[in-house]
Length: 532
Image 1 (tube, rainbow, N blue to C red):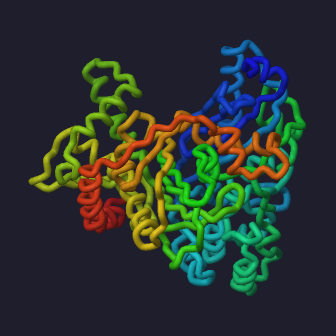
Image 2 (tube, rainbow, N blue to C red):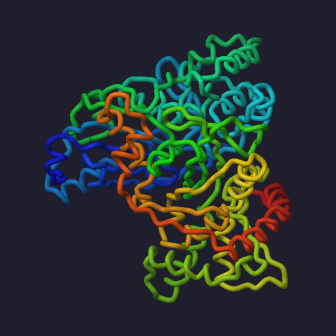
Image 3 (spheres, rainbow, N blue to C red):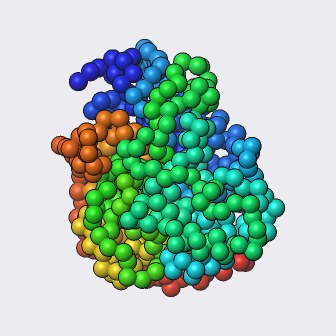
């Protein structure tokens, strides 16, 4: 095993960068896939003119800041600089809407996955295709723009996701990994490209508009994991590294979505494997053996990075409101002159939740900062509800918020496991929800009523996952499948902490979720009555 400095100086390191909802993170790995340096940049989307968005300046300033942070980490740890790499991978939050004209200009502000503004389009396309089209998907955003008669639509020459946009600017190639592409438009699992029958139906649907484009003309080309995604150009290198030290010509793997990188980071690309990512949003991914029997608006059908069918339960909300309460308690402590370390505060409050009653003492909360499609909530209104009989303690309060973070996820997952009878023997967890040892894992096991395993690498998450996909592109053996590469080259001998569901927790979560579903009308009405 080479020393990290030797790996970096010889250009053998691999870089993965992922644009998450609240943080852009970079991870540099060595030849054994071990992280040796990291960088990050915090950012936040804004609600502007009715859309959740990030500006182009946010994107590029954030990327440069993240890379600068990585370069500083390398200097401080190893007294060297990054000049060349074996490979790079870029990934980002999936779905959304980034439409460009022939000059490469953005035609409308970036609309992220978080927007719940495409209901009519999603419903119409689901009916047309007989295939679930969630509101987050790019095709739903496009068709809603058409229904709204937005002026920019005829000018579209290229439609992509955030990861696809970054990759385009880095390499000049308009491509997407199949996993990210499956969140734009349905994929034909046999051909591993856009479903041609549905493409024809869409073109026929909008034919009377006489737009100067057909759908496949404006969508990115699809590549599978392991295929070559192009080389870092001189322009791309300058956009990434302001210092000019990073050389051009580095191979770049197909860009992927955060769902695909989560699957790679948890070795969950084989049939019947599953993983759950829980942070700002949450999603469970289960690789399916067969198509589902029915259309379920709560379940997306997407793919692994190498094109296998995946059932995905996605929720727009998870830890945002929970984090806000932790910040409130931090402010409370500081009002008494107590300097509260945030990590310690999370640990104390999360562990306090385990002292609470398994049904949260009758307390109920909804952590919906934004709309939540699974629960038919169009406008987020975080809310705490209790009856006079509820046991209002800190432990029950915190437990109710941990439960609520997974409430919508639980509703969708029950459809997959109970109605569709999809077997899930174990789920690998990753994301901020699992940062405090034991607590998030135990709550998730109760919600899913399934053992939850957390790997020692779980904290690395998406950027590590895209680094693994970049490494696979340049280091795989002839004919080596992605699942085999991950199992044999990356995760062989890796350690995971597995937690079985505590049956009292399971019973308590079931009681909570029953009240959660019964009380959802109050949350829906709050969106109508409590206006900004």
